[in-house]
Image 1 (cartoon, helix red, strand yellow):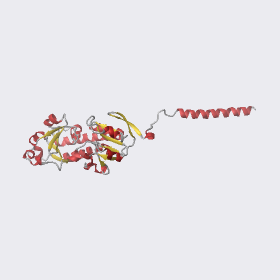
Image 2 (spheres, helix red, strand yellow; image 1 turned 30 degrees about the horizontal axis):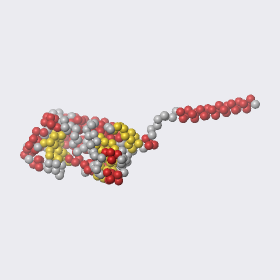
Image 3 (cartoon, one colour; image 1 turned 90 degrees about the horizontal axis):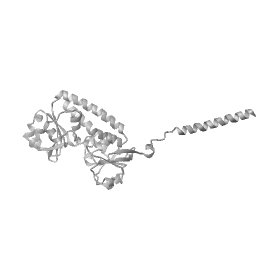
Image 4 (cartoon, rainbow, N blue to C red; image 1 turned 90 degrees about the vertical axis):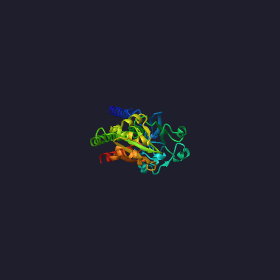
Amino acid sequence: MKKALLFLTLALVLILGACSSKNEDTSTKPEKEDTSKDTGTITYESENGPIEVPADPQRVVVLSTYAGHVAALDVPIVGVDSWSKTNPRFDKYLKDAEEVTDEDLEKIIELEPDLIIGLSTMNNIDRLKEIAPVVTFTYGKVDYLTQQVEIGKLLNKGDEAQDWVTDFQARSKEAGKEIKAKIGDDKTVSVIENFDKQLYVYGDNWARGTEILYQEMELPMPEKVKADALKEGYFALSTEVLPEYMGDYVILSRNGDGDNSFMETETYKNTPAVKEGHVFEAEASEFYFNDPLTLEYQLEFFKEHFLK
């Protein structure tokens, strides 16, 4: 009898212990789990507040400026603005993307996007929000590299974007040291473009390679450029005053199908930069932007031309 009672007691202890173990396992589970895999969304803190977006977007429409930022992170683009669509540097990324504008609502609906990205100044934002989550950015609100980090966060690839930024800055600064060592610390550089029968000179934050040359490489710009273009980002020129804005070296962002008659004038031909072969011509459509794809191309362009 005593043996039977002892057996029952031990059995009861084992059963209670097992139940206790199960309860402890349940209680030790994290109170808050990452549900992004379950819901397929993340919350991005946009400049207009938090917005729920796909955790792994597969059909993105980019309506202005940021196609290269998205493509650099290997995110599929199904619709894009005309400037990006005609950029030769983007061909392999956008070959299947449709050209659209913020007015092409029906066409965008047909593309079935899961995310729409654009500028804060674009039209029909409220109507576009009925199609898919819309995230807008104000151009220039953050610096050009922070912009890539923000788009990385939006696309759930923030770490990847930050790694690229850190590496790109290091490579740009190193190239700047090499260029200064070859041409001299005091040699000035200008970035000039012809567009729609008008000449422009650029400051330090208006794409065309300006961010690399002036911010990362810290190459000096002519005083006239600093006075007239630095604040606004660009300044319109006439052929007559062009020599005043041309540095010792000139990056000419040239529209091949534009009015290039200024290059045939004596005023242009007699500038020191032209005479010494220090004008480096780039295809304008490949130089417009400051996304990672374009920046990588610009960096190699500068290294090739300044260091050759």
